[in-house]
Length: 524
Image 1 (tube, one colour):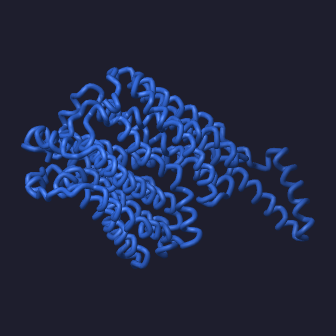
Image 2 (cartoon, one colour):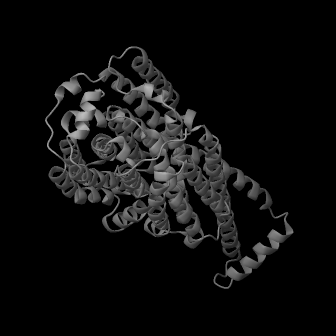
């Protein structure tokens, strides 16, 4: 249920500047910790199955359950914030996250998806709380810096998560990522309890919430996440439940939107915000960001693991360069949006992301970590410019009463957008890798004189260690097949990077449609 204008003004005026910044720090720690945890678990997916004694397909349901619960969480987090207060929400969310993480370190495999769902629901609250607090505690003309800090706190995990995931799994095993949550849960809860102001319980707000709208939208979004996360793994139509669940998702989401537009007195989401200049376009641009971020959270680490034989933490050392770019890009974006047209900052961010993807499209099988460094630094700067500018357009001029809808929709794009982008990239990688393998395989015949001579030379080399001519010839063929497979994978990933650049170029077309905004006036 949305706040009234009177309640919104009271929520801002009742918070002193000092309390506002202390609350931002507390909610920011929760956002950073929750984001690191979610992304570290995604990066450790390959080790998670080993920790529970499950196959890769079976273990994938643990991650999917967490993502499904998170998408339901971000839709209800802002109303819960208004009803129970930020202090209880952040402290309680951190403690419940830690409790489920503790259970997951020792739980049997059969209960892991259910426990991961509770874990994901609690953690999803933390990643929304900072944005809700920034909208409630700061007046519109002073939100620039708080929202930039929110953008940074929700982005830094992209660069840090691979190293954390790799270190935890290397030292603590497949379930090691859950120990990370146990470490931070109590400190984050204590800081939130100490720094966020006391607020009375407001249960009537929950009683008046559009629960039917929430149930329909959450159910449809959860079903959509399940389809996107499992569809590629289950070869889409080969699993009979995929089309059925996809149909159910479409029906539930359509019913939720119809209910909120035409029936609900106090809808879960105020869809009238889409009539504001630039809001709908900014939400669309936020979806494109999820494709761009896969460059660092999926494409580069996977390329290094598959091509160079890196472990996750070694790939993380390369991705860490993105943090350097972020430390430049976010302050630059804040200064830019204070006095210049935010549309140009958004366009510059898109251009840097696209340039990084084009650089990576030059990938070949011999690339190591150092070849990715320029692209990752550029992507970090682009992320700062892009995300800060998107936040400016999503929230500019919104009253605190609209903060719940803005926070819910923006974080919905994060969860659904990540699932959609990951699905699209996985499909593109599989299709292009298969195509390149088939093309390379056409030339790997003994009718090719050059190839035959190469195999003979390699077999002669191997015969120095083995008197068995057949074994030497087989070893030579194995080397050739391995090289061909690595080259096909490298070419497939080069196409993935080109695809990411194409998506970003497509969304660049929308930038001129955004309105020119008056800059934030910090401190006025």
